[in-house]
Image 1 (spheres, helix red, strand yellow):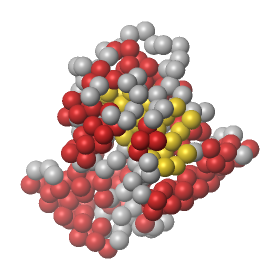
Image 2 (cartoon, rainbow, N blue to C red; image 1 turned 120 degrees about the vertical axis):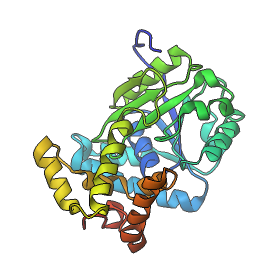
Image 3 (cartoon, rainbow, N blue to C red; image 1 turned 90 degrees about the vertical axis):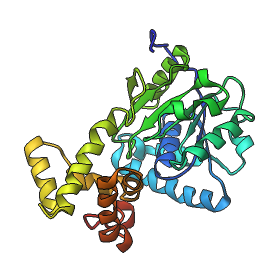
Image 4 (tube, rainbow, N blue to C red; image 1 turned 180 degrees about the vertical axis):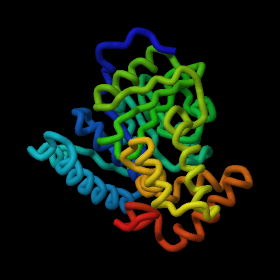
Length: 290
């Protein structure tokens, strides 16, 4: 899939579709790294929420990212372009990164729309964590210029970017996106053929599922599962701390579409935590209080 890496991606103007938890992080980190970024969402209400999210990210960068306290974080916040006009959002983009809900039909419809609006040279990428890019590719109208670019939550700290194309992705495009990921401070992880779960979730999902089975089955309390994982492996966080970082709703949605065992675990998670408003760090409580 890969060739000799280019010295520059030549990607400067980036549009991020969706300003949810990860979409906002992708937009902010990309702008923080010197790219011109437009963040798109479907309504002015969504953009109002996004502005508050970007304010929070600026404050987080000041606390956690070296060099951000000299005004760079606020300059990044001020330099972001926010819009609910899809045509304007993609009109001059070198790269469009889709970070909308994990609904296949919605993603396909969105890419079909922007194919008619974006320049022919624009590269399209999906940040999907569960869908293979080949499930979306034909809807984009530019299968040679489409791939997956998957980021992890808390992007400023967990700075990996998994790059996965389809058999129809142009290898030169693949390599440009790998280089782009490096330019925005990520560690690129090239994936040489399609794999559900990519690298991160192929490792993480079984761990989280096993942890939940221990708690839901009454074998051990979440805090004790986390303790044994941290002590025995040296990991800074345990699986239930990871649940809270990710947010419990996304794992629940994935489990709800799994096999019988997965759906049972998802139901336990819903009844005991989600229905009680305990959805993770953003809510102030999940498996732990914050």
